[in-house]
Image 1 (spheres, helix red, strand yellow):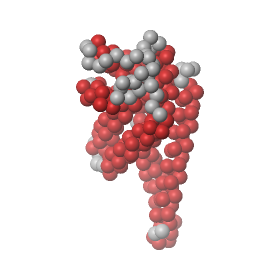
Image 2 (cartoon, one colour; image 1 turned 135 degrees about the vertical axis):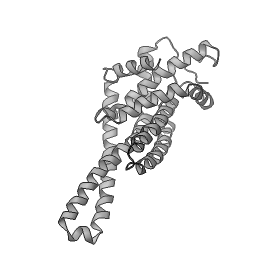
Image 3 (tube, rainbow, N blue to C red; image 1 turned 180 degrees about the vertical axis):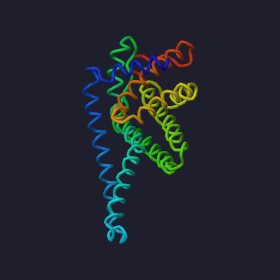
Image 4 (cartoon, rainbow, N blue to C red; image 1 turned 60 degrees about the horizontal axis):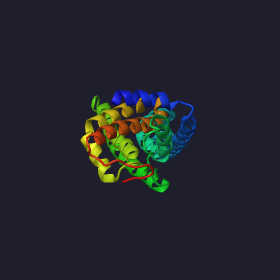
Length: 241
C-alpha cells in the first residue's frame, strides 16, 4: 500500500498538472529559506562583531565566519521541515484537488479547508517542528544520536502533519485522529520517507508537493479499506462529515 502510494506520488510531482503548483511551491520555499538565512546571518554578524577577540585577530575573524557559515547550513537543514510545514499547509488543497480529480474521478471530492485555517494548521505544525528540531539540533555534536534524533522526530511530525491535512478534507478532526492512530505504523513509515527526502539536497525542496500527493494516495487507500469494513460512513459529493 505505502510503496504504491510512494511511486504514484513520485510520478505526479513533475507531471504537467502539478507543475504550476510545484513552481509556486519552490518559489515560496526558497523565499522563506532566504528570509531565514538573512535573519540568521544578521544575528551571527551581530554576535561576532561584538567580540573584541574576533575584531583584534583577522585569522580568528576568518575562522569564526567560516564556522558560522557551516553552522548556518546545518541550521537550515534542521529548519527545513518547519518551512515545509508552512508551504504544505498553503498548497495541499491545490495538490489534493489535482490528484483526486486525476486518479480518483469516481470518488466524491474532498472539501478544501478555509485558507486561513489551513495556514494556521501549517503554522501550528511548523511551530511544533521548529521546537522539536531545535532540540534535535542541540544533539548535533553527539555522533550517532544526531541523525537518529533528526530522522525519528521528523518521521513522526511529517507523517502526522501531511496525513492529517490530507484526511482533513474528508473527515472531522476526531475521525482523522482515530484513522491516524489505527494506522500509526503506515503513517510513520510514510513520514520516514518524507524525512529521508528532507536529507537529500535540492530534492528536499519538493517535499511539500511530494508529501501532499503521497498522503492523498495513502489516505485514499486507508479510507477505502476502512469504508469496506464499515468503520466510517460514506461521504457524499461536496459533503464533509
